[in-house]
Length: 500
Image (spheres, rainbow, N blue to C red):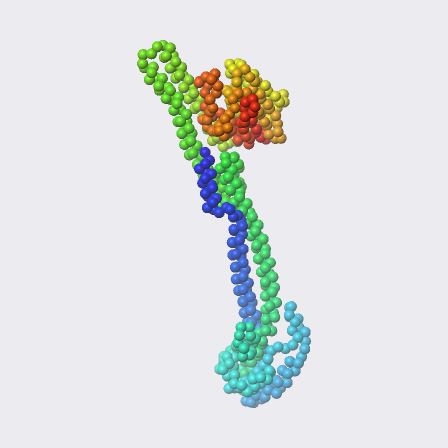
């Protein structure tokens, strides 16, 4: 019944790649995506932080250079000629000053800015470094734009070395006026290296924050991957249990889509079972009914001929026997089909299994007397258990019928009832022929039966459904049924769990 579902489940698991954990693969993909996003965001944030610090520094430099320009205009520019002697003394004194300014986590101990002044044609008349006095800076962007009435600023290498990583400086300029006449420009120079210490400090803090956030995200992702993997494993185990015919409750999952998947697996199993169930039963029943139908047809055809009275009686008896066999087949098939297709919980009640067993034996007293058989029941005098009373009684009755069917005449059938932990065990032993080794694996197959001894009448030929019925009853009680050969004959053991 479950072969098609098992093969389909195997193919599905193979295609889905369940050899590798869903959670591990999802977590690995999550790490890759998170790592890329973290790197991108951190790189972009550092770049934006660098730009922001330069913009902030440039804004402060604009204020500073305009203050210097105003100071130079009022104190130094006395004519169209520039007298830089005073500013030269001020700058020299400022550069010699030593102080300690702790700006957040960076210590500043000296002045790092420089200053140069040009005349109206861009010639440097003062340079705080003393290196560029007399040079023509009219082509430099800060001087050129300022002398042309625009805002002048630039970022340039401080040496002739223009390789990556070479030192650079930010330069901001302001115009100098004398009686509303443009007489030159003043440029404030700020080494970018002085800003990089602040940038490195803030970048380190930003990296720590990003690493912490990434670590938390990885932890959350790991937990979510475990939850996701557990949900998938629940669905897989649920599908495996259904494929093996084990009744389990549908798993409750937090994600609605996964719950829908579990429900789809359940519906698919039910649909496949229903289709295969009907096909198999129709095929099996057709095969088993073929023999008695053929027998009835042959007997009816012969009855139309002129036969002796005794032959007619024999043919009528054959029709009756075949009819009884077909009735038993149909009845047993219906009982088994009803039990196998039943999805509702079994009816649990508390009852004495010993008295139930004794009643079953009494109901078969005629069969026992016909073969001169006796029974022996060992175990507790009373044994109260919980389970489906009707189904368990039918299981014991079927096993006892088998024992009577194959038992040697004038012998004893031994029944033993006992508990084993939370399990109930019922052993039935009968003397008689053992089961061939090749048949031991087939005794629970539908319609499989072995011939009894020659004294068994044809009217009581086994339907081959009894042990299948017993196995299904045991499965409904989370138990098992086994058959084995012993020295004196055959032993059938029923073991089931008490249901609370």
